[in-house]
Amino acid sequence: MLNTYSAAYLAFIAVIVVWFVFYKTRFGMRLRAVGEHPEACATLGINVFRIRYICVILSGFLAGLGGAYVTLATVSQFRPAIIVGQGFIAIAAVIFGKFTPHGAMLACLLFGLCTGLRTIASQGNWISPNLISMIPYVVTVITLVLFVGHARVPAANGKPFERSK
Image (tube, rainbow, N blue to C red; front, side, top):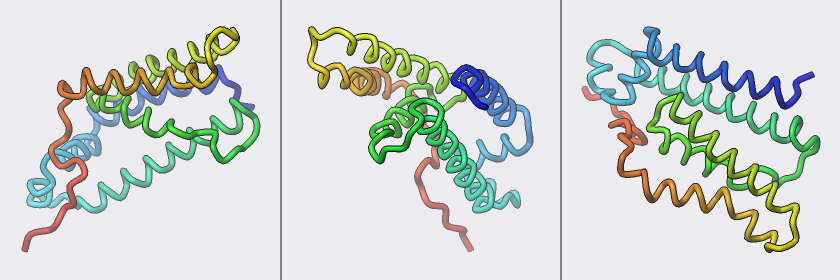
């Protein structure tokens, strides 16, 4: 059975594997090239649509694993609003981590620390629970405001690719 500690170790191993795939394999080189200059990749004969579809499918799979972990291993039950706002924090972690696997890991550790502080601070009755539950989101917004200008976004991020004729 997968417990909290083994899932944490798997997350650190996944960061190493993703870094290796991104920076040491041919697929990773193509993936980064498609994110920067899809027109140039198409000129070289790389199927941009296939690479993008593979990435979307893999990201959906990994997001599903993360959601399954949160609902099954952490809370042990499903509630419709259990992961509210966590996707926003995940996107902020990628931006704050400068679109690198190790940077996103460090950003996730920071935001996880804020969630842990929320849990510790909620044990006392001297602060409103509503204010305490805002801690991770406030830290996320503050880090985005302070550091988003320093991140270099991939050039073709969010831009549709149209094959020229």
